Image (tube, rainbow, N blue to C red; front, side, top):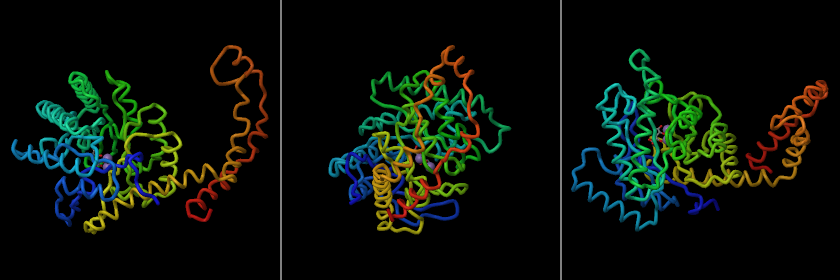
Length: 386
Ligand code: GCO
Ligand code: MN
Ligand code: MN
C-alpha cells in the first residue's frame, strides 16, 4: 500500500535528502552524502528520479579531472538504480558574487557570469537527460528599494530569459523552462514574488511557449496565500511544467517540511486538483528532514512525503466516489447550464435579453448552499472515519 510507482514520477533534489541540517543559527548535524549515496537512498525509498543544481553535483571549484570522475560515479549510480534525471537547475544564489542577484544584479559582469553559468548548467542537465530546467531567483531581489530599480529588474530578467531560450533553441535541446516564485528569503523581498507574477511575466517573453512555472507549496503559504488556487491558474494556462511539494506553516520562515505534514486539508485539495486534472509532469519533493534527524530518519522523511501524497490521492478518489458528497455537489451545481441564452459568449441579442430579464434577488439570496455539510464530510473523510 502507498508504494511509489514510476508513473507517479516522484522525484527529490540532491539538495533535499542531502541537506546536512545547517541553518542560520547552527552548523551541520549530518555529514555530506555523495551524489552516488543519495541516488541509492532515493532508489531505496522508491523515487523515480533525482534533480540537481549544477553545484550539487559538481562543486563550483572542481577541476576537470574531478568533474569527470563525479560524472562517471553519478552515471553509474543512475544506471545501477534506474533513476532518471527529469529536471536540472542552476545555483545562482550561494556564491558571494550573486549577493545582489544574478540576472538582476546591478553589476553587468555578474549578469553575464550568471548567463554563462546557466548555459553550462543547462548543458549539464541535458547530459543526464533533463527535459525541464528550473529557475529559482532566490537572490533576485532587495533589502532596500533605494539601490535597485524594480522596472529595470523586470527588463533584465526578461533579457536573460530570452537569451537562454534562444540558447536552448540554438543547441536543438528538448528542454522547457519552469520559473519558481518565492516572496522572500533569502532576500528581504524577491521579484516576481508569486506564481501569478511569474505567469504574467512569462507572457512577455519572446518564446513564452517554452516557459512555464514550478510553483512550491511553501512559497505561496509563507505569504498566507492559497497555493491550490495558484496551481489551478497555472494548470488552466497549460503552464504547470513542474511542482515543488513540501509543507509550511503560513507566516513563518521557509520550513520545507515533509509534504502533507502540516496542512492536511489544503494538501488534499492540491493533490485532488493535480489528480483530477491529469497532471503528468514530475512530482518533486523540495523539502528536507528536521535538523534533528539522522539518516535513518531522513529516509523516513522521504518515505513520508511519498506516502502522504499517495494517501491524499486515495482520499481524492474516495471523495469523488462518495455518494453523499457527490449528491451535495450535484445540488450545489444544479441549474448551472440554464443561463446560456443570457450570458456566456457575448452577443448584442443576449445583452438585450439580459437587460430585459428580471431577477428575484430574495430567492437568489435565500437559496441553500450546504457548504458546511460538504466541508464536514470532507473533514470526516480526511480524519478517516468515512
Ligand atoms: C528554496 C527553493 C529552492 C529551489 C531550487 C530549485 O526555497 O530554496 O525552493 O529549493 O526550488 O533552488 O531551483
Ligand atoms: Mn523553497
Ligand atoms: Mn523549490
